[in-house]
Length: 393
Length: 237
Image (spheres, rainbow over the protein chains, first blue to last red):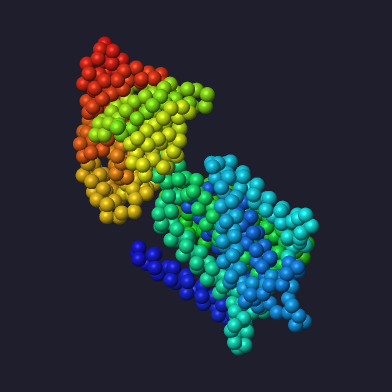
């Protein structure tokens, strides 16, 4: 049973994930259901949720501004793979080509290189933002991260004119971001040469590989020495320090690692949707990702994946679908109230209800992490025992 | 040169002065105990040594090197380890994981295994429970674990804060026997204890603290006979 859980289940999941595009093609040809686009968006959020899981689930730091790193990653791809910086003309391994045959304005780097740059850059930003804030504990940290989550999109909105320099193009955003691709491939593999909008398979496999890397790193981190340090800091910072663990650098690592995956997801997302605006990175997203982590089970890798799939599936696929059915039903029975209903508008209302129900019925999440579940269930083990010990003295 | 030397240490909690010029020494191989009533500054002295509450004035020397102002997490690599007041074990980790945390800064796997066995020898009860979650054990077992965990860094100096707190008299006896054994195996111990009776039984020397100052210092056997100490701390009238 233990072996089954450890190897068979992940193996099956990975195989199913890799076979998803043909399955989807089959579904499309038979029942006219195309899940490719929602699947990609869900996968981006799985990555974000796993990134936040490092911060919230492993290290126990409540981060309400995770969207900042998502936005940073997206803007990195915007800067390095579009014609935004018209002053220069730099190309390296990019899929972008000049239509007129002349020099292509802007910076156009290979998407794969940009991924690495985005990860490193957001990780660094995570450290810079984290350094002054991580001396705070609990609620105070949450408030400061909330602040950063608001500041960064606001900065992108206003940095269209930084002392005359157009860094982010303000509210108009950065448009026409280059597609990823492998330009060196032969003409017969055109879909992989330059990822297009008609064939989403290359996009899907790219994010799938990114998600798998994220899962792998999550597992390795959880079981590492650093992972143990995170748990100890989460349990008792003073005791952890007595073991020779520096709580500040330990927490900083969690923050930086989380930021790296937030940035990678952002870079992919930026390339996928091609146009990025400061308003795409609102506070709502921070909360949505946090909901995924809490719903699935803080610190539990499977749980967090499930939480992301459930919430984003609901958001991106189920609600619009339901909406259509309700409209059709409304038209059929001639009820203007039903046919005019806009269900997706109520998504956060629904998430709220789900969260409240979860907190009441199963606060440890759908698939809980062993230690986390206990922290939420028997409070006596921490305080009670020590207190009763004192009472006897 | 003493292993540990406090020279005129003043420590504060905010504006409140808790230590008013503490000077003491601990020589290698000794068991030194600090006794005194509630609020005398015993725990504060340990906290000052361990970097949790850096002293505002005075010097703390460990093997002749000034260590005041070093952060708490830097102490373990200097060779100072502590079993803090209230035990502070990691409740959700197993006994084994707790012991491994004690050796966190070490990289010699084989040595760590050896030391886990050594702790199990000292506290056989822990071996029976090594897979059990620490928070589910009794107070006495948790105390054993806290001391065992502190030993895992192979410290030169072990700081023990109230190891008898909340334990049945039989267990107190057993824990103190083990502390004596640890000392015989070569670890110097600074022991803070309210239960002056048992502390003075195993200690080489003792300091008596009152409201943040040291009022008496003598070999443990002398302190045990001191009528003032007997009256104030040993519960005799």
